[in-house]
Length: 181
Image (cartoon, rainbow, N blue to C red):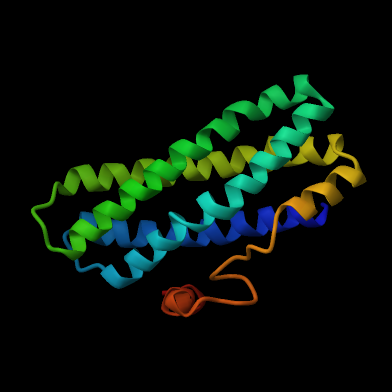
């Protein structure tokens, strides 16, 4: 697997860990148990910024390059790329729900549980389809020169939690992941 796809795959692995943590907190919330609000806020802050701001735009650039090389093959990636906006919107809605929990507002518990479960299911399904169909297709179709051009167009944005320059605001979230909370 080339370097760009390996980085995107690593993003998926890391996002999967965060989704697992989100599900653990969701289970506690569903049962009426205490949840770690600060942890949830940090998690959803990350999930509503990094995928939308860095990860998905990189995949979108790959899809556009794929369409230039093989429009027929790229048509299979169109629906996946269209889902990025939907997933970004869902992440923002989950983040807003987490903030409602933090404010101890009058809550629609069932609505929040359903919203978070929908987000988790859709994101997992989306990442799985990218891993199984989109990434292999891109690797088979794009040329070395395409990958070099893409790498140059990605800019310097790095993962603010799992990258080499971790932002302090994500330290407790990352520590929770590493400790296996």
